[in-house]
Length: 181
Image 1 (tube, rainbow, N blue to C red):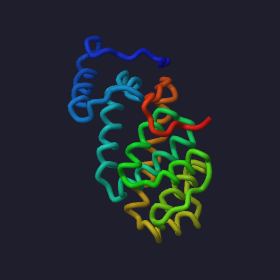
Image 2 (spheres, one colour; image 1 turned 180 degrees about the vertical axis):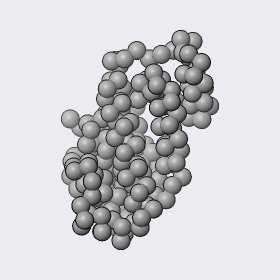
Image 3 (cartoon, rainbow, N blue to C red; image 1 turned 90 degrees about the vertical axis):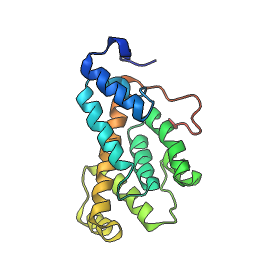
Image 4 (cartoon, rainbow, N blue to C red; image 1 turned 90 degrees about the horizontal axis):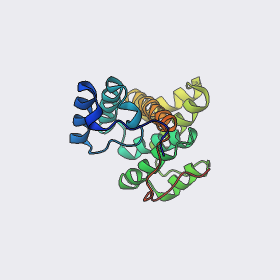
């Protein structure tokens, strides 16, 4: 059960309803962290624009999901983790990588780019920045555009995780992998 009441469409003000209708037309989903975003439709809309960018950015969708899962694990955020797992599998992320992230272990990556995304995410989450060595390595492997998109992905999923945790979003029972305690 969520900690904050989910606003029903008939109870939304005009701005909330406009954003809700846009979300339903594009994704068909309004649960999870959206329960909170509905109270601040401008934030909801901005968050969706960032998600749209991450759906077609310089990172592969596997890399976006690696960043998302790493953030969800860091924030112990069960709803986003559960929702991201099927998307990660669909994007080609190996189950062993998902399991390692869930177990708080370093995954073995076949791709140096995927590994760099993970390393950037881990360092950002641990310290809030990249040290000189982490930045240099990431810039060499990813280039500046993918490095910036990685920072954006981690930031986006931190926000999503914090919102999901704050509102008490409950992961779907059908999730193929659940976040371990």
